[in-house]
Length: 291
Image (tube, rainbow, N blue to C red; front, side, top):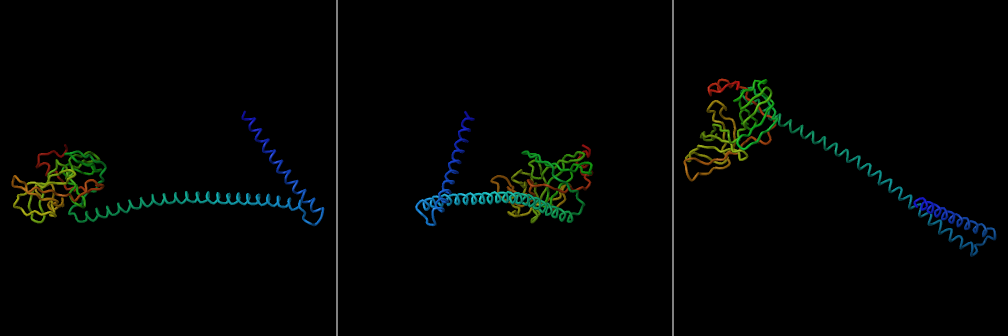
């Protein structure tokens, strides 16, 4: 069936072409005949000329339209190719721009760390945060420094903004840091302006709560809270946070004080470990260095 249909189409197309060819030949013949009969344009000559002119005009317009379509199509195709090329260049440059931004951001961060290191009275050990273990009462991060780097349990960890936490477990190449904002963390602290002391306890995402500050103490929102230096773990004066809320408790003798951390614990990438020897401190606390 398909072969027969194809044959019929070919036959029809051949017939049309032959008919057109015959018509053209007849017109040309009529024109020649009219030219041979005399120099005047008779009615047959004019009729033939009008028909041939109309046919030539239609053919010319058709060919011109096809040429315009071809040129438009080629132009659009070239524009599409150029657009795709430019889009690839834009994607490439955007990717490079992202790398440059990340590099510049790290440069600023390292510059801040370097400036902070120069203010310290000891030579800190830099470390990268390689893991996080967020739980409700036991928030920790893992750093890429361990016993191979002479890191011991009990050492403190800092950032340019202030206290990060304290190392609680070590392995040969890694250590686990208990963050200062963990609910299981408690630090001896004081209000920097008035030197009033209290215990700063972690409150997770809410930051800190400063306990045991008497109601007759001078406390204001915006007061800076720093380490008190009691207990020999944290040196005094290291920033911890800023008082964000002060409220009198209906019962009891203490203020209810909320403290906003200065360190953004969600964005920790690099930290500094205080490599000061803590063996004597651990021994005084009846803790084993090698546990």
